[in-house]
Image (cartoon, rainbow, N blue to C red; front, side):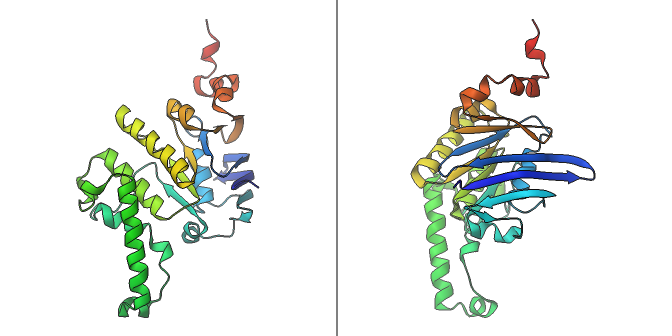
Length: 257
């Protein structure tokens, strides 16, 4: 059974078909990427998985469990975490506090317990802090752990957002345009972290990305969307030579002499 299975996913916005019968699956332990031109429907797929967007039809299953009836705040508890194309951090908070916010789904208490700061709450808070510190060490953020996020360079902010997602302890990590806005050195560092997260922590990664070199170097399998439809799926070497993919990106100009 695949970790994530998407079947005949269809989404429309005011009559515009954003996704049209999209189907693919992601196996546990893979780095799986969805690529395509602007407006192809890539981020809509993520929004459906996170339940930010509701599909018109089709199924989304994680470990065989249907996600369609879930609410957005329930998704992290199922083992799904996400970063965003535009960084969504708490800019006035420190790196540590931002990463701690990713641990909230594991802190189960009530208002009274929180107000009294009971031993159970103290234990959960201590466990969350240990988990956050482990992420900070993993991503080599110790030097900036007490720094406000707003004061940090863009590339470091991207790493902090990745850390917050890792603090959820996901089995499936969704990365939405992770290389966007990064320079060559930062992109190479990101590729290292992606590989380390998969190999060292057993997390399955699902990327939406425009940087084709980044995708080709990292991915086990790639799905290509165009106008809301799957036009190709396969290993990087198969996608690279697919004429339908070239047409989608270059509009057929690659045929010209």
